[in-house]
Image 1 (cartoon, one colour):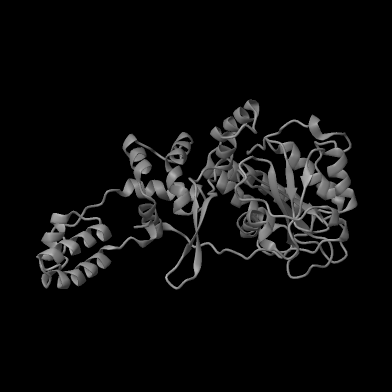
Image 2 (image 1 turned 60 degrees about the vertical axis):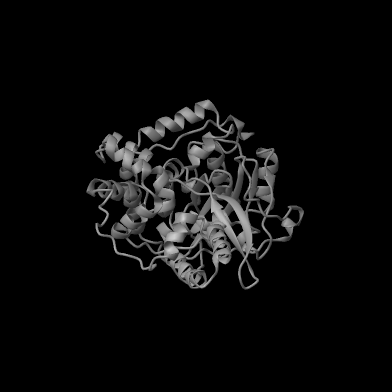
Length: 425
C-alpha cells in the first residue's frame, strides 16, 4: 500500500468486522483466500488474523495510561528555542533544536544537560507541534504586494521562470516592496529584496524613491556583502529594474551577470521572493507610510540585523520532490515533499561557491552572536522605525544622505570590493 492510502486503526477495525461476517460463513478453502486477502491489505500475520476473526473485535481501553516522555524541562527549552527562532513551524524547528540549544547555552540563555540534548535530538515533529500548541502566539500574516508593469526596453531580455531544482548558488529572484501607506503620492521608501534560489540566502535594503542612483547603490551593497558570486538576476518587469542606466550598470560595471525577467502578469514566476516579501518585509513593516531619510537609515539598521538572523540562524525548507497522483474522483493533485530544514549559511557551506576565508568569517560571526538577544534587538529597531514621524507637507528629503558612505561607486569594476560582515552591537 502507498503511504497516503494507509488505514488508521478505526478503519482497520471496520474492515475486519466486514471481513469477519464473510469469514464465519465461508468454508475452509474460502477462509484461506480471505486470510490471504487480509494479509495483503493489512500486512498482519496470518495467525494474528485468525485470532481476530474469532474475537469480538471491540477495542478495549488501556488499563494503564502511558506516562509523559518529555518533562517540563523540554517544554521550557522549546519555549526559549521557539522564541529565538521567531516562531517558525515545527517541521523547521524539530531538526534544529539541538544546534540552537547549544548556541543559546553558549550565551547563557538556556541551561542544557546531556539528557535534555538527547531528548531534543529524538523528539518528533508531531510532539513538538503538540507542545507548541500550548505556547504559540498567533502572528498575523499580511498579503503580498502587487507587481508593476514593464517597458519596451525589456523586450531584449528573456522571459522565464527559475527552476526549483537549481542547486548552484548565485541565481537570485528580485523584487521591490512599496512603503507608501494609503497614498502613492510623492517620494517614499522602497525595499529591494534578493532571494537566492538554491540556498534561500536573502538580501534587503531600503531606498528613498526608485531612481537609478539609489537602486545602483543598493546593488553595490549586495554585491559587496554577498559571500558568493552572482550568476543571474531575475526580477519582474518593473521600470526600477529595467532602464538604460541599470542595464548599463549590469553590462559595463558588473560583467558576467545574466539578466532575465518573469512573464507579465505571472506573479508566481518569482515565488520565493514573493513569499519573503510577506514574511521578511510586510510582517515587520506592514503597510505604513515611510518617506524620510531617517526612515531609510532606521530600516537599514533593522535589515542589517535581519541579514545576520535570517541567513545564519533561521532554517528554511526547500522543495525536494513533486509527485502527481490521481484521486478517486478521477482528478489529479500534486504531492510536494521538502528536504531537511537548514539555514541558508549551512546550505551555502555544502557547495563550493563560498571560499574558506568567507566561511570562517561567517562561522566566527555566528558563534559570537546570541540569537535570542539579536531577535530582541530586531524588534527594538522596529520600534525605533515606527517612532519616527513622516515628512510634512512640502518637506524635501536629500536622497544623497541615504547612500552608502564607505563604498566608492565610481570605481570600475566591482571586483575590488572586499566582503564585509555586518556587525551586531
